[in-house]
Length: 286
Image 1 (spheres, rainbow, N blue to C red):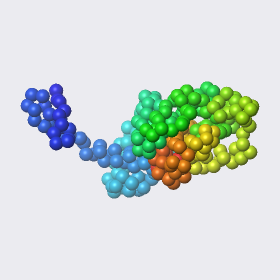
Image 2: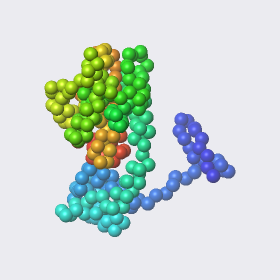
Image 3: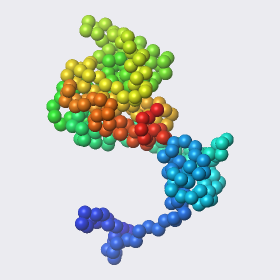
Image 4: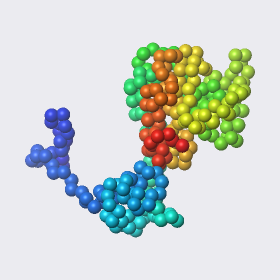
């Protein structure tokens, strides 16, 4: 048995009987080199030729080749019609097993907390529920804000940044069906209680969101509150969550290249990568 104690700010594993530091576990260096090749392929997010894969893993092609042969025999890698290396059947099975254990909202919880703490803004997470985009987590800012969102709020697909971000990635037939129910959602009603129709430039707005993977809502639908929102993708390429930051109007920068939006995008990229959107963790997802 072993115990862990802290000394000088570090954790140290010791043996319960002798109380002497345990020896580091021994690994197999050749397997670690093999792992570097797998990491390089994952980072690329696409099939790679022997030379490119070896270069990205930081080793000579002659050294990489026998590792790749063994990975093929084990089913972890295969080769496409061009001879490039890609994930094999065993890799896919392992990936699916890991994905089945994931809870998107559970995985996103630490990111929501970190965003609220780092930015000083309210952070929210929404999923696409049976009636529409639904808020499932809200971490309110430390400084008072009049944010009308609550857990369970169903958001407009037309008038909110979160809703439009979902709408931008929905198949047209699905979006049309959901828009027919727009009147039941927050900000889905006009001043006289009549259902709002999509804005004239709605299609163009959704096209812009698909391109930038980012949307804003400035003092609309809630006067005095600005919102920025980004999508989180899963292994099928569908939007599984939308993350958002909210604050008092003009109290923070809402541009795509501003720090709040960049923090939000970085969080979404990390989650997309964890949900299997391979190759989407760096740069713009899409």
